[in-house]
Amino acid sequence: MKQQVNSKDQVMLLLDSRSHGGIETHVLELATGLSGSGQSVSVCFLCRYDQPHPLQDLLEHQNIPVNYFDGTLSATLNYIKFTNPTVLHTHGYKAGIIGRIAASLLKKRVISTFHAGEIGSGKLRFYDWLDRYTAFLADKRLAVSQDIAARIPFVRVELVRNFINTRTLVPSRGKQIAFVGRLSAEKGPDRMLDYAKALPHLSFHIYGDGPERARLEQSAPGNVTFYGFCNMKEHWCDIGLLVMPSRYEGMPLAALEALGRGIPVAATRVGAMEQLISNGSNGYLVEEANHKLLSAAINTWHSLTEENRQEISQAAIETVERGFSVDAVLPSILEDYRKTA
Image 1: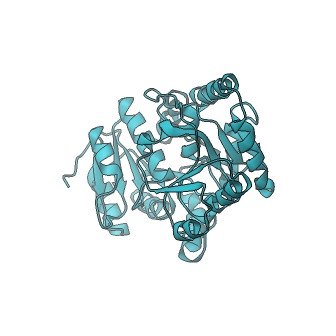
Image 2 (image 1 turned 45 degrees about the vertical axis):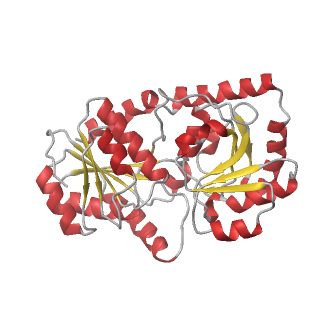
């Protein structure tokens, strides 16, 4: 792919990724917002996996340059030398580790955003540890929740809000009770089956894929429908209530996508969820240890009058527009870049 040298105030966003999830959506929204504000920005993937990344077409449609490295420190060093960005902004474990080392060697300014709330196991656990214990190499450290910030040792970490572009969102008039996300233990999709069994008169819809999918489909009751990985832009309009029974979270973009469309969220109080959800106003919030109470919250929402649903829907939209939209959050990120550079 052709390499493009941008202006001297270029921001390079670096991540290691092979699929489209929460971190990737954050980077897409950030790159699009920066480009729309007139900031020169490129997105670089630490490694090219089997196919072009799912974000590539979306980024290039916005005229945002996309490049791939070979996963090594030397390739990262060479590209940073070639493009000479003013600020490097890393996202995720491996990109954070390699990006900070490269920036330190080249005396470049670097910001790192920490997204993951779960600790993981095996190799992932090691990367998480190394990511946190090399955080001191960054000029500025950001985390999407207080829980994540508290796990980074020795250094100051500031909170940054995830955000979405609300300008083109259309309010949903759907009725589905849905889970949207990766089907892995930390997201709690297994708990959706408990709620479906407790509320057999309701239908439940699960959007997403992941390591737990086969097991979940085998044990799911008949009132649960699985859709696999989807382009959610085509499905948000069908959803009336988003259920997020997570064991660990940062600040999930799925919740912002839902709230921004007027879809209330029923969630466990993990990560930054309490910054988003006001219980009974724009959704429902229960303690993670008492996640089974979400079945009562689901039934409460189902029993609302149309007038009450409109009220909770409007409160959801206002939450995102006030505190989690491009217009609300991007100015502080641009100021971070200015101060760091």
